Length: 419
Image 1 (tube, helix red, strand yellow):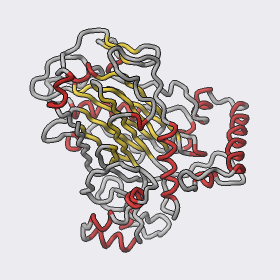
Image 2: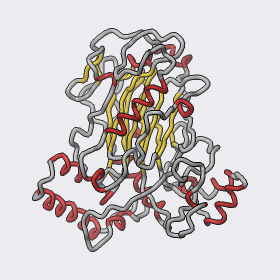
Image 3: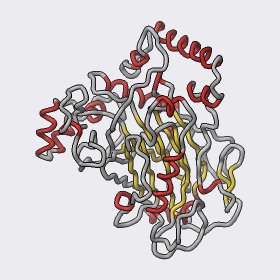
Image 4: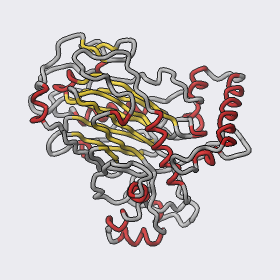
């Protein structure tokens, strides 16, 4: 099956099999605890480099001390688990399928059918279907959407896709309250409503509902939310065409925090695993380490390595008629799409970059792209394929404009080179 990810700026994604890519917006620094060493020093290492015992001990001691400090506080237990990146209902997710109208979740969040649904083509017809996939990603800079925002221009294709995978970064501001406190799901709910309206606006529905009710939609496919998951500012959702949802099974999510101290969720990944017929899919929405300093790309490489290593999908049983157990890691899937704000920058000077931007010389800019350089050197994303980059750098625009911050800010400290 050939997937065809699509992206409209500001966007980007990576896929093993095929895909696209994206850049970032603003960043904030949050100081939580003081230690004699910077937590980031432990991660400024080349991939596959063994941690010195002193650094390993420091990280272990730091986490132990953090546990002691938090246990004495009056913060809710939810926040304690969030600080330490423990699994606290972390495998729960939102889905139209989990509603009582035809679908039920068992105790392990495995999907089970409880009522008849519309028939989709048989497995033998899947090759002729050639399902199409839309993949988009957007760092919204902590801005919550207004109700009048129309996403149809971004999401609609000349021919509708069968699966929509949409990722966001910074759907909430990355301040201390949001990173360390209870999760604010308000903006995520707004984005889901806008996406549902955009995808299903021509299906004859009077208004967008919060459930996926099987029915006949003649003119336009109707889309159901297969799964959505938020970790701090990272948000990922997968929408499936209604006539295919009967054949979606083994939905699972997994979150990996790579932010403050290498554990918190201001950076990291949200991954969704699912099976469509007998093909397994994994969608990995990420926000990697930021920074323009020399060597920051190594931290991003390490984030990728740790996400691949730590992402786990637990399955309690083998589905009937399934020849193999569901995948438990990212790389065990048949089709993998990696998307998000990967934060790789352009290894070019500020003036040179602006000159190439004026000429719309994307190819020359791509030769300076850190991700491409690191990938060609075999340090990250080996054997992955990236879709053609046909748009200008998306980092960093002034809010609600097509003008770069670099073109207006005269302070070299805040003047971010477009990337």
